[in-house]
Image 1 (cartoon, rainbow, N blue to C red):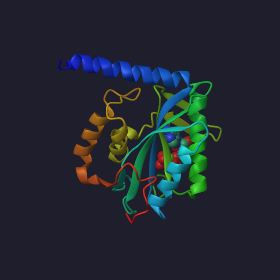
Image 2: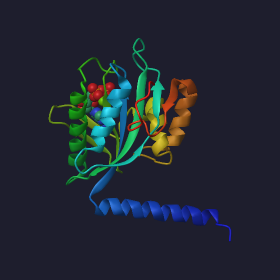
Image 3: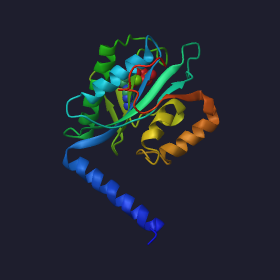
Image 4: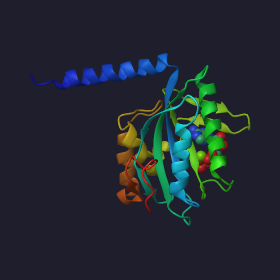
Length: 214
Ligand code: ADP
Ligand code: MG
């Protein structure tokens, strides 16, 4: 018997519901992280970041995007960026704000250990780790250092260099507060920025692949 499309959709819905429930029972939240770098050895820095993210306590890697070379947005006279995204199942924490703040603290400390030097916003950086999405939660909270944490990351929708790798991982995801999926936002930004604004330079095995010149 040929499968009916409605049955396939219902099947997928059940599978994703079951996965969501399994994460909930395990006390995990699916988070998406944006990785970027354009100073020093960007690919090496992103590899180090990806491996360190995978080694964070209680964290499971649920997916890795392809690796992209991207044209800088905002400040133009700087080297091209290397960008990627990762899906991580991370400890949910006692509440979403605490869980997301703990994850951001881990991202910031990884940036430091990989050698990020403070410079102007949107300028060059050794590594930038952004918390794009934290489960179904919308978060707007002041951090202990008086900066804010805003999730989903507000720039995500406007930036092809984030949407392209995120769309490798979760094209059908509709982050909380969005009226469109990641794939739709990606297509819109691709039309606006031009498809050569982001270029695939390596497949999903880039964090572990034998070091090749990229
Ligand atoms: P950029 O905005 O270019 O990524 P930084 O990485 O220096 O710049 O981040 C500046 C501040 O942005 C961080 O100290 C953090 O408090 C804040 N921020 C707010 N929301 C987020 C988020 N979702 N992910 C990462 N940083 C965030
Ligand atoms: Mg950042």
